[in-house]
Length: 510
Image (cartoon, rainbow, N blue to C red; front, side, top):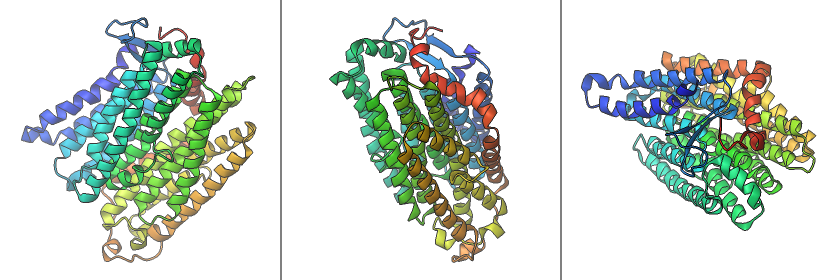
């Protein structure tokens, strides 16, 4: 399976440049969307095939672990989980975009930029060294800046500029953190850095400075409170498929995934890093949902819920780090914390992408994002309304939808870890989330339309419906398939983090 792994990056990056070339020929310009869907589908098949293989680790260009500049590819359980998630959401977004993007010009540019972002996110989750992790983070970020501004309206341009400025600040922090690590260890490979930092000592001032810089930069990428200011503007302004990608996978791959790698696979789990993650997770979970409750713009409401739901994931990862760093660590409990966090990460990618696509279909068909101007959509847009309800029930944690199981596991793990207050807060946030989405059901799907355009809305095109139905089915099935997911996908992903010392002690050797 090793020859297939680089294709996850090579295929979308190559196709992105091919789309630009094809756009110069009139009859080829219409084929950029089919090319993009074919490439992402191939990536999804490769990612699914990799789930049945063992860990794959190799160096590009014949370099070995002894070289500080060696480019290592790491495809372990966590990388496979993220690759499947990224390419699944990307495929659905491309299908949805076929009719949705017809109102825009230069659709080929959209296809090219989205392929570039997908290839870069695949690179992020496969990178085994810190510098190439940073490079792929930047490629994904630059593509996302352009995609947020794709409509070229004042709102989009302002949101993209704000996103770019804050994203650049986060990138500067990350690059400074990588520089400090290189100055300490003379290495960039995560495995070697992990080994060398164990000899230097994790409590030195330079090591703490590097950790602070990296976590601050990645928290900004993940839109964790108090680094969240860019997200509520960027998500509503972007086209719906991009909102789905930003919330569904970008903040996870560029932020949460990278934070988990840094904490477990580079610095190693420790009390102070765990405390930082748990504090950020709790604040994001609570403040995000409270800010969401007062929103009447459906996409801004969903954007704030992205902050809140990612708080659950970061809190669970922090709890796992805290349990694993105890003098007598309970690795089974740490694994349970990670299982809940990673399961919620996957579930959030599904139900939040579904909700953003549903909101995009509603906005396109009604001409508004204001909940008070909608109404009665359950009678005029039955498929979209059904999918929106599935997404709402999933994010609110109502059984038997997938969000219920992941939130329940996180809450149980927090209680077992001795964090009863945090578990109670997690329950409270789930209840407020439910209340928030009752408002969506009441004003958007039921009642009478207050706007003439909304009153004449019809169902979205078939391809948009298809994309939403696929995600809705996953939201239902993944909750019921928790046992096989734990066995074949989420368990190996948690082991990739908890086994950092064991798995990385070879310095990247296969």
